[in-house]
Image 1 (cartoon, rainbow, N blue to C red):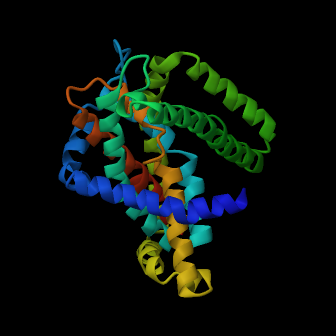
Image 2: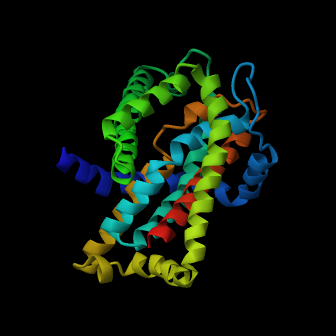
Length: 311
């Protein structure tokens, strides 16, 4: 398993994520730059924590907060910590690069999800008819159940349990049960309850997170320029802090930035298109630019703030 993980995350994943991001960036004429302002206006112009129940789908903002609920969380904390620990501060720079191209990838994910959606039908089969589409649909469903239903939740609940045990002395098993019960109350209410909770919880969660991070940075403001400088300096000369040859250290910084970046913003993972597919918009492009904003908030705002606090 470790050998497979090594080749998958250190080589295949790096080329697939960067390659896919480059492809969609070129095909969309760098939509993440051209339409960035449009996306920000769409999100904050429709900002509403009381969207209520929708008839046949979600509001665009509800779809975004449902997606961000998956994107912003433990991945930003554990992802940034792991990247800095193993790849040095320069790994954050490579997380930014992945996020930049990931904005084009997630734009494509959201647009294609809107274009090919069908109620009670698998959109993958529509996009790829025949046996290949059937295989892709089945593989996607199984992979998503394993990734989000098991692996992803294990990381989240384990991190919460260990933190509460270390900080407050609460047994991790008790925290696990509490998290499971809270999650069940939300999930068993269906997509409308999930959207209703996320549209209220995500803005508050993000605001508290940003406020806490900013307080720390203000208290340590004299170290902020040096922290930012370390990210850029060790992005290209990481061996000064990681050790070993320049080639090995650079590989570690890039690979950690890429895989932790995917863990953080999930652009290209396939975990958010189903949320964006349910948004009620006039054109798929409208939800695409909203989806891009999710990656920007996740990586360039929340994760960067967290990384600077750690450094």
